[in-house]
Image (cartoon, rainbow, N blue to C red; front, top):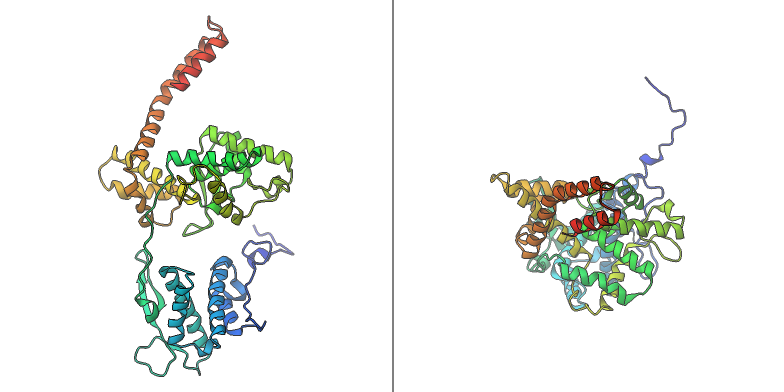
Length: 430
């Protein structure tokens, strides 16, 4: 059967589902002149007129624009144009970044590689000018770059550019992954009481912290969870669905997570209270809003907000170095440990690989290689204690339910409601 759409609206095909066009960065020099070479490169890097904002995302384009702007400012101070840059210019640029203490070695290397990509594009657009080459046997070029290749996750070979000015730079050591511990979680929750006596702010902080702990999501993903998903999960006693993945290999996917009933209830109550105060919250469907206006809070608000809360707390020293991302590390450590523990009782073949695959399926983590960084943390005494507690709860749950059902059946047969309630509470707390 064929249906004919006489006047279809196909705008969604051209704006990637966005109702408004994505913002576009434009670069100008200090005199207000339009930088044609730089903006031409950004346009190409961003995907051009037909696919801008799809891949890479506009945020990535902005990041490159900021890098190029730093280089443009440096060139202006040196009284040079982009076409006048040479090897010495790149060496001076690296020294400038190091002296200004603007970045570590890893960031400097990434910055220079982005500049080399810009220079390579500029060379292709100005073939008459000997600006840059990757051919080590070529002579007369201002910049001699180095071409490298590597394989990511055993996929096809990927190419990137380098230069002698950064070849000797050592990557900045990555701090070992650490998860937020129970004592730190308690301190994190207590910190808000010293920062504010406003009940709305206190409840918002609790909801924010709880979602960080039980979803394992990134900051931007947590604040993007639809309020309606929490409401539906609580009212239907179900998983929280629609938890977005906004970064990495599974960007655009949605996860389902289990949040304990008591914690879910507190988040639910906060959302209902917020919607009563600000009915417009039902329209944008956000959980975290401004108390006065009801408008959604931006990510940058949370980036600075949690630091202020921690710094004002008596637990500031204990929480020093702790951020919202440590909750994510805790979630993944427990997830991997739980899968290893579960599979170790079933089979001894390829336990680690199967456990990591199961954890990846649940978490939408980019790869098993990155997820494996949590394996060494699974033997931590606190993680093992959490696992044991979960196992005991799972083991005792059926017998507790049977006992409660037996008490319920005794109501009206010699047992008063007060006695039944007391007996049920005793079973639950046991």
